[in-house]
Length: 221
Image (tube, rainbow, N blue to C red):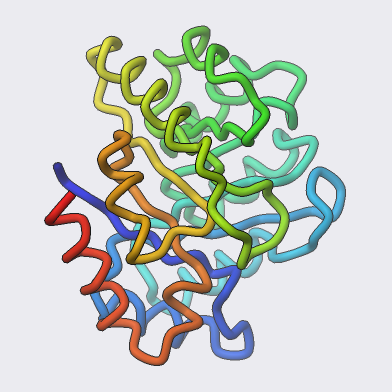
């Protein structure tokens, strides 16, 4: 399995965000998870497309995995496409017409992703699985970093993996929330191949050692 580790900028030091991103990439991160919160869909406020655009202009060319925790989502998609997003994931609750929203992302040149909150039924995936390149299972309730992993998320990962495999399509299965070196293997065994980690990486003293520990756990999964 080709595992990806995706540090979440939500836990980074925003006063030196570019340096923080370069540091985790140098430490072995595969992609960067870019959390967008609007203080409406979720009770927090983070960053917008201008920040991503600034990072691109600063020469950061890593894959940017934009997670839109914002409603309505469609209004922001064009901004993030222009800013250089590679993947844009949306919550079904954040749009009135999910098929249209996912098509808007793909037509704009990015990979569409669909996000499932802990209480969002995974059955919805069957309706749009031909339109997505990534499925993101939230293992916490979105809005804040540093929360504990919700164990029931493992069952949802398993269900999502079965649906993805049955589709015959190459779709990444991402998990976000409370991921650490001591539980990342359980998520991998449940079917995840992409792992978002915020405070576990950016809150550590040695980014490389933390990412290496995650990879070691994945190798034994």
